[in-house]
Figure 1 (cartoon, rainbow, N blue to C red):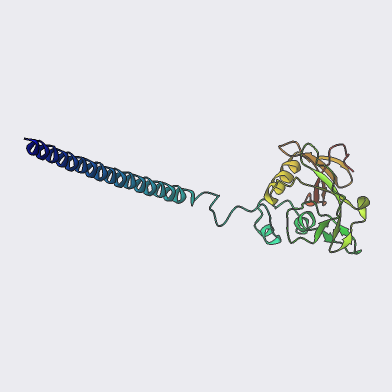
Figure 2 (figure 1 turned 180 degrees about the vertical axis):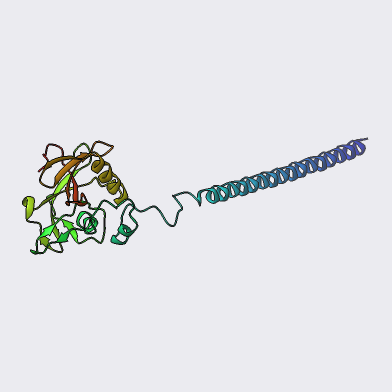
Length: 219
């Protein structure tokens, strides 16, 4: 009887152990499957993120952030050749305004636009004034290294945010609004209210045109 009980107890213990191992293995296998599933989900998520990033980069390639040819705010003398609506200017006026010129007496004249990177005109360091409400400013200048002598060496400048064509358009507007002051001196307002002084030939062609700094008078 005792041997039978021992046998039964031993058999029961063995079955219990085997059952426990089976359950443990099942749990372990389940854990592995869960881990594998989580890994697959993570991989899918990473791939989706990469796909989204690739899509975003593709969409942005055409934007200014990825543009290989961003719009430049600087101009060269060659850009002046494509200016439009210049019929009312004498041939030398464009150079006088945008580049500065040396007259027959060897004196520096003109130079009223500082956006041409290869111009002969330069602003003398430390002489640039604070822009007025229109963005116009004044500064002493030199052309080809020769300091300007007239007007105490100062030129008035069109606002830096204007393109050369903007300047031409504003001068045309002022020309159409012009009033006579004295001699060959005229002045008129552009559509945005900028007062521009002009020197004209006998046949009303523009020799020079420059903005009037706020508080200054037409000469």
